[in-house]
Length: 191
Image (cartoon, rainbow, N blue to C red):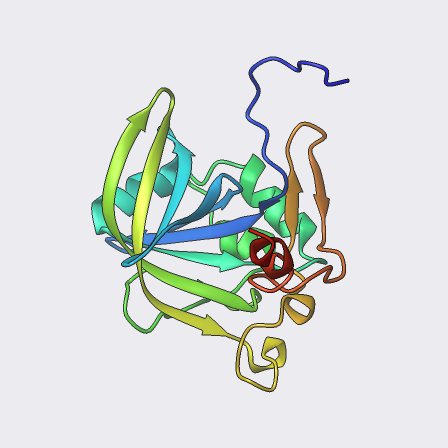
């Protein structure tokens, strides 16, 4: 039997990402878990950020940002960047993280994150106390150590840090359970 839980912002799991922006000599860094792909053509990321956040101000001013995917083991700096305001604080230095130049956008990449995405802002939509930020992906970066023999990101090697809403936990991914676009074929063939 199902139990109703009421209206809650729950979707499991959510990536715990570090989003960086820069404008006029100022850098910002924030933890964002409400994030995901919203389009493949053009490749576009959507994320929700509270309207009051300093990094959002920098994203809107510069029109650019990076999404940096931390791995398991980076829980403390990721959590820090989500619970401390960036106003007057260099979160990179305080969290022990390194800002390195991106190849296309002005926002920095987080060197310690093994996967990084450069984005150009394409839209901001008000959603209550949040802003839905849409960014077109203009480049991606991966540490060679997380690539498989075909040159693709291996999720097991990446070992991305995940956030579990509701219980407010950080976790990693488990083992592979099936191949997408393959495991459902026998059911499709029965149609």
